[in-house]
Image (cartoon, rainbow, N blue to C red; front, side, top):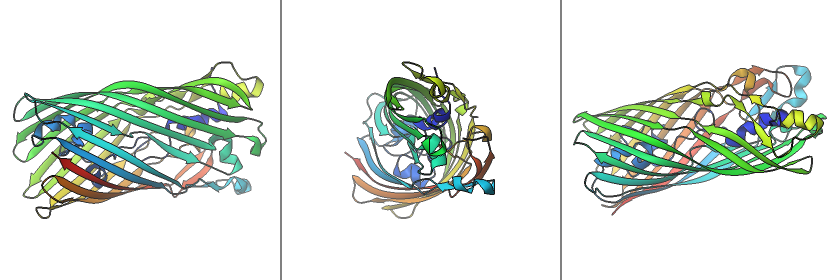
Length: 403
């Protein structure tokens, strides 16, 4: 059993405009935010446990920890219909604000092994509309995904390290749609959660003193959300699967004097998201069954991101970072909806770390995600118009502590 009109909206059961293609949020630490996520080959703090656990082998032989708090702001996205006669459908989404904590920990070395642990929020966020037209498919879509990621690295030699980890993703989503404002008597309020598992792999190689090469892979995890739905005030059991796609990252870093340059390429395998298919305990009757219980094609495509970061040791205490990235979006025009009006983006970032004393380092970073305007031409209730002003601001404060 599946769904269609609100099924469109439900796509963001795992989605909301995030900081990467689709609903990924790659930037999860001070360094990653400051470097636009060009932070794999040169991952050099406790957050290596997440970004490149093979690099845990190169960290100082003591406990490493990091705690961050990020403020995320998503400005209103403006929609303008292509047909002037449909100007009543012009609208803007709500501005969204979030506070997101992250945690990282790496152990000292034990017989060439290092152990790490991270708590991150790699997917999600939210999108809400109040105008009747987008509200019919996307009144609210909120997703919270917490990833718990224990990892272990092994130093094969002074030049080569490998690592692996287990991914546990807890997801909690909410979908609301209300078609009454456009004459469609279909109202849904759905919530669900899930715990699902995957794995990650990493390798780091130091061919010479100033060069670091790395590759990481995070497996696809199917988020099998189960919960309850109210459809026109009638209760149903509901479930849906949405993928957290696989991710391959290749990176190289080069250090000259006090400056490190890193280039990172990542491919997100969004082709796993070919359709959205809701299942209910009982098929809703009549039109409601057609709207909510038929599968919805998505046909997303794999995406590439190109990231460049520079880290400069200004003084013994102060380190400065800047970053830039080009990030493609996975959504074809004919399946773009109000729940996730994504587009290609350019990312700009800056940040700094200050070594307060021998054990404590404080840091701050800012990232601006500038998404392109996008015009689509689809049949109602899908948008046929232009989305503008899509963007994101991310400010991260944190502390790194060794002991």
